[in-house]
Amino acid sequence: MNIIDTIEKEQMKKTTPQFSIGDQVDVSVKIVEGDKERIQVFSGVVIARNGGGFKETFTVRRIVQGEGVERVFPIHSPKIADIKVLKSGKVRRAKLYYMRGRTGKGTRLQEKFEKENPKATSEPVTAKKKSEKEKT
Image (cartoon, rainbow, N blue to C red; front, side, top):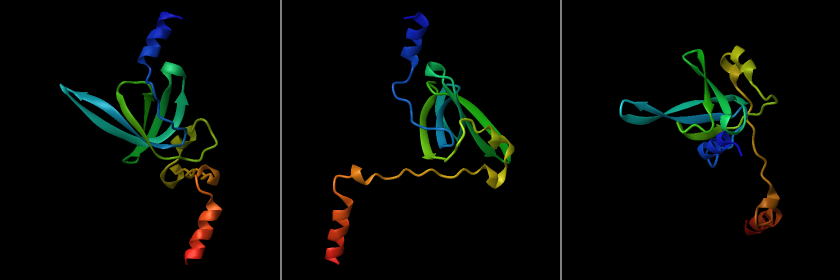
């Protein structure tokens, strides 16, 4: 194995957050001001993911006072404290660069909902409904 590969593996985070293109995320970034360190949250929509492995990055876009702001974050950066997924967007593209030309309500994405699997629950759904009907 190459020396560079071993160094990159040491620097990679053990667990990376699961998010995809179109998701509304809160990225907590560590900011150093003088000798103090604080966390600032950058909230927006993930419009792209690039690269792979240690060099993988993602782009987050948000609108601030009518102006579009985009930031590119390395996934394995030690400056990123946390990534929270607020909503999952339903998209059919790998890159959402067309969002740059949209304003107002045109920037909204349809929300993607996860279907609940009735087989995953321990108790059958039909038996539960029958018992509730008998009680009433």
